[in-house]
Amino acid sequence: MKVSDFVATYLEKRGVKHVFELSGGMITHLLDSLNQKTSINIITMHHEQSAAFAADAYGRITGIPGIALATSGPGATNLLTGIGSCYFDSSPAIFITGQVNRHEQKRDRNIRQLGFQETDIISMAKPITKACFKIESEHELPAILEQAFLIATEGRPGPVLIDIPMDIQRAQIDIRDYGVVAPILLGPSAAQLKNIFDDIKKAKRPLVLVGRGVRSAFAIEQLKIFLQKTQLPVATTLLAIDALEHDSPSRVGFIGAYGNRWANIAFGECDLLLVIGSRLDIRQTGADTKFFENRKIYHVDCEQDEINNRVKGCIPVIADAKQFFTDFVNEAATEIFEKPIEWYDYINALRLQWPDTAELKPVGINPNVFIHALSHNSKLTKCYLADVGSHQMWTAQSIEIYKDQLFLTSGGMGAMGFALPAAIGACFALNLKPVVAIIGDGCMQLNIQELQTIVRNKLPVKMVVMNNKNLGMIRQFQDSYFESRYQSTYWGYSAPDFEKVANAYEINAITINTEDEIEDAIKWMWNDQNVNSPVLLQVMIDPHTNTYPKIAFGRPITEMEPFAKPIEMEGT
Image 1 (cartoon, rainbow, N blue to C red):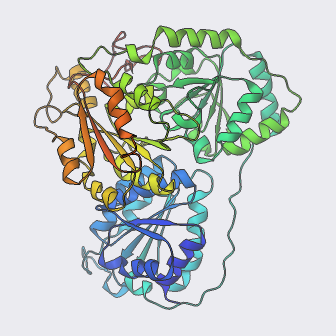
Image 2: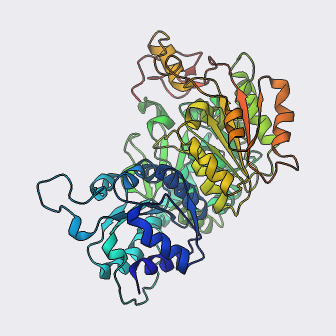
Image 3: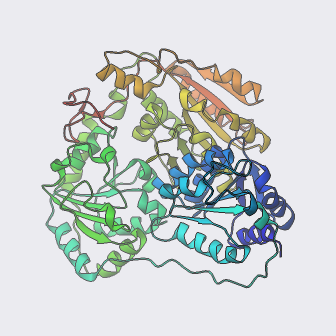
């Protein structure tokens, strides 16, 4: 069998239904084989970075590694930001790059390049992948593909890269069947669980912090059963906003640098913290980690090195999130946990005292008010995707996730330009059900070319462009630390009228400027004419609208701007 035919049919055998790519000479054999030998849908993007972001979203949603292909040289290097996004946000993905023929490779020669577009993508991608494979012989490829799928999905999921020279792609190999190896799930010990049971019962102010690890383990149903048993309140990180429905009685809110003020206060004042699948990075805890080290913290993670990394004194529980919840509920069959009613009442009082819609007093549209309205009127969407910046935090603060809805954003990489191509991957992963992409004007201009991919594939992607005519999060930083010198955020920056841009792509679009236009505009997105089509809603936001609340840098997480002031300049 021809190698490229084997790769194509192997992907189909592993349940891959879509691959994302931008054509180039060194992947033509692979593309032809996918087209001729499989029913896999080849989604041609307009930039390799977009293909990588689409694969990221596809892998997050399905649990099957998202697949992105790129040619050698610039095609391969253009994947790197998306590969990093998969690595930092635990998205299973396999990136296949074409490479020049083996006889055209420089190898140990002291030259920069021999073959046209020859590039050592393996060395570049190694720090941001779980594994990289440089194929030297056609006979090693079957085993490597098997390893790649296992590595991408076992433990903490992530990306794998396979670099295949063109002459190997067209070679012939004999195929034998390789059995699929199932990942091994780590669980907690009985002694660890008994200690957790006892500490939950003793705590007056217990709190669970749920991170992306719960979603990546596909453990949402197990989380809900765990909460029915324990009756504990739950705060979530940015990448786990969709772990609980908005109306769940256990839901506290979103914590972090721009978290809900009431949720941050609860996070800071709890006396027992059970962290499940969260890294406790600086965006979640603030810079003052000592503040957290005066309470008992159990940290459940499948990667040991993530525990006691920044916040010290945590009790490590090395376990897969799904296995932890399953073992906990089984071991706790005879245990009785009482609901901490006074603690819940306190948290709910904080929520009433500090509503997210009252943090800002902007001119014109209040973005938090808009996001609530968007949620109320978008029950048909299967997924929200937020890009990176002020609009991302307004969305995280105020989005209302209902049953079977998802929320995706770029967390660890924080890559502007994520949402539009990721929406494409999400839409295909969700069988062409509608998705909503919430994008800032700056982010929209990074991968705007994918409007054509959306149109060509007739995807029901609802694009909400929150246009404040500047790079608002950095502009706010310049207000705080650079005496409002707006270089490259407001000065020397501009954005087009995105309604006109959408019309150029033959996408229906409208613009709103005032709050009394919000309800009708969102209903327009979902009317009978638009429900199964792409549309764009441009929401004009005053350029000086800030993102509040925000941790006052250097202070504990409970002290947030604008009422508290930072005591040092942000270093991250």
